[in-house]
Length: 433
Image (cartoon, rainbow, N blue to C red; front, side):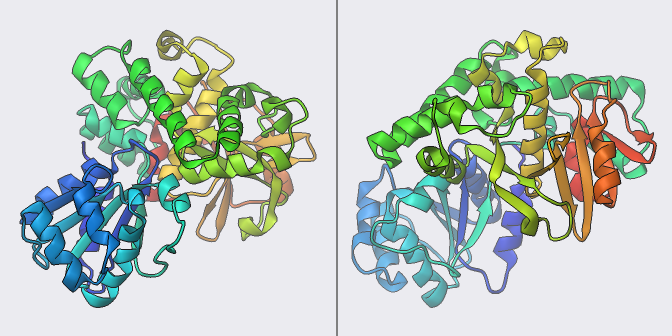
């Protein structure tokens, strides 16, 4: 699958002051595949070491971490030469070998001519530090998320449609009706399949939506297994309870995360750490409430108030038990509003935007507030073509931002100076506003 991270990987390879690279993200988002494809295309050879399964190679990091000692050992174990500038040394599942992550510091300081890349789960890299610190300042990190909608279009062989959407966005002119309807259809399919590579590959191989939930359920179970792997038994119970409450939290009219929904009498003292755990694992996305929409937004965050979204809308559909038929037909299911909002949160995160929402003394709530350079935009999300709502108007009147954006299934255009952008075109936002 073509991924946007490919350009960032090539830019890393060409840097003069290149540091070892760490690609991190939630499990099964495609970190290993992306790095191996990059190595295959950009280098003469790749030395791939899975530090979780190859214990002989992992043991090399138990002794001297200086590259001049370490590299000959790795070459002997793998039976391959590691040549500066010609070989990509790829350390997979690096969270499994604590000293391997530490070794990146010494590669940066003593052997910068070697090209070293590592892949690891966000959770393991963040939490699996018992004796050795993270090599701060000695590695470059790149996050990887599930495929966004544009990458999904590429995987479906719809590159030309993606480009036409970008052109329509640049002109802010409607797509031809036929193309608009095709894009809406593919958007609804994305809500079912999501952006996890395994789910997309299953659909591409079978052509059926019926097998996708089974793959998504396996991913959810793997996430649950990780909870037990990296947390104590008592913490695991709380983490699972928070994660399992996600569909219920998002189904509420007020989507602010409420601890009492997880457990009667639940408090931040009980569930604050489990929520941080889920965010560090990259399997939920936190959206903070703003007290005031002014630059810099981070200074006006109401820390105790937040929403949580799933990192992947397809996983949320399976977790909630929402049938593919309901999503594909566009039937007015109440949970589709939550699905749409989660889709927007996922796409914004993939594009590098922080997640904020705004509330006005509980009289109006705006789904997202978007910082773009020194400008601020209010973003209202609608699941269909009906777009009448007062929240965006209240926000514009009270906060006086740069402008307003309404995301819906309507075509491109303007409504009372508010920019109307189809949900399927959300990947264009980094292109400029």
